[in-house]
Image (tube, rainbow, N blue to C red):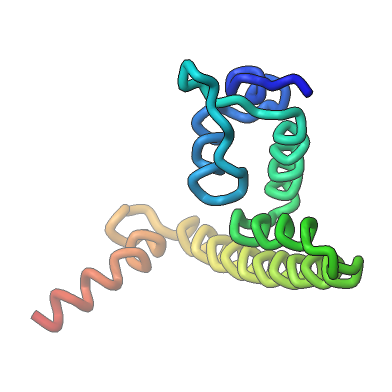
Length: 141
């Protein structure tokens, strides 16, 4: 089996060298063997694993969730239902985020509409709303 240097792995997987080192520190990749020269040496499977990690990130999985998925991959007792449950949980999480983003969008649109009727920046609803915590702190002092 041929071995690859970290630069070759990075190029083949379209992941940066520092990202590979970070994933090693996070336990997403095993610490590689080293050549007598001290260079890391990787086997071809690391490229596939990095592509898996990148694809999972694109689907919205966090590194902790990806680590869990990788653990399932190597667990002989894992069934498809276990992986499906993780995907369903991710969908629920995404739907929650969408609802929160829609609420944020509605709030910003409301502020924008209020801004259209104001001229002076000291009357701007966005400034007034964002400045509220500071005003409350001054009032308590």
